[in-house]
Image 1: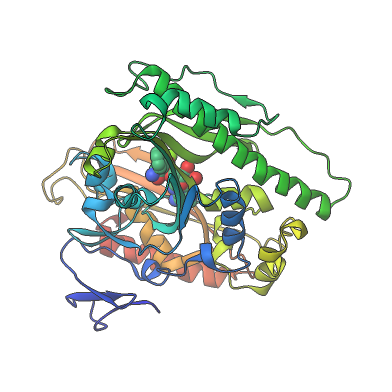
Image 2: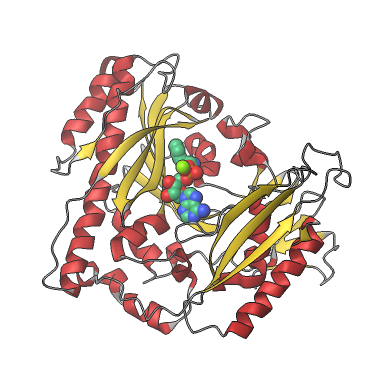
Length: 451
Ligand code: FA5
Ligand code: MG
């Protein structure tokens, strides 16, 4: 493994990650399953679908305009991950329930944006792409995983280097130089909106509109590129494949480091799937990075989500599979994109649902005594306990019931855990064994009372 404590004792005071040593403190919350995924870097493993997806996206953002960074270290400071991007001190993303802390000032990056300011400061090119593994305490389902891969992209224009300092004109010229496409895209909102999606102070509407147009067209072309490969793969897999029109839409979004901001969603398997967030970079970030005359855009895309669309991979856990039935389907493809085929799922093994119902810690025993009791329990803590015990044998976890006792006011939850291996049939005994350990851990770690 790449990550270990300096003793087997969980109270040990330091942890080594990829050969670097970090002091642990009360903020430390890395779990064993996370520690073992650090630095697998699927995005640079030749023939891995995440790596193939990265290189297809990169082809739409060519060097040398865009400089590629694929090996930035996953451990960053809270300054890099949050402060440098203008996250307020009380932003929920900073909480221990959402973020993996190595110690109070050090985290596993939760997004590739953690490197934005540093790369703006280095100022080595007009644009860049950063691909990397990122870590989040999050839900468990087909499209969420606590370790995933993002690609950050950005493109800058320097006021001092464009003719007459006219950024808007220079950017529109670059928009004109981009290819056009036929894909239909829903984009119902105006480029800026005074409350929902404001223009930044210091940017003219013309500048923001031009930058937004370049950003959206660049990303739409990326989607077109992925789906042209997806279509070829589908036809190669079944010659009578009938193409369905792609449904894509821009929606307004909020990020502390861009304004205006958007997310791009793609309709997939009956639902809108969010694939990326983006926007016009806040000028404040450029100023702090020592490049105040630059204006530009940035985006952050989920590589797993794009790979799922590209190959029709039905479950995000598959990307971590060491099963030959998975890996062999992609072998040789990094050097032969024309040979892409759809992923052929191996038979689906039976699911085994188990429910666990529990009372939250009662008000009287809860530290601080939150109203109704148990205010200190966060769903991500439940997810993490289940993940640590069940690993990739858990397909999803959903809350199926919530109940408040009419007399005592005590709260009860019921969660349904779906145990299903991707690789074999689980026996009922095995599922029971996992489930029993989950029940015990919920009591031990969260102090709940089982029903
Ligand atoms: C961000 O992470 C921003 N840093 C993106 C950004 C960059 C905005 C630059 C503006 C400028 P968000 O949390 O929405 O945003 O994540 C971006 C993408 O990562 C999502 O659209 C999704 O595709 C993917 N993603 C998020 N959480 C998960 C998860 N748990 N598992 C897999 N993919 C995920
Ligand atoms: Mg989002």
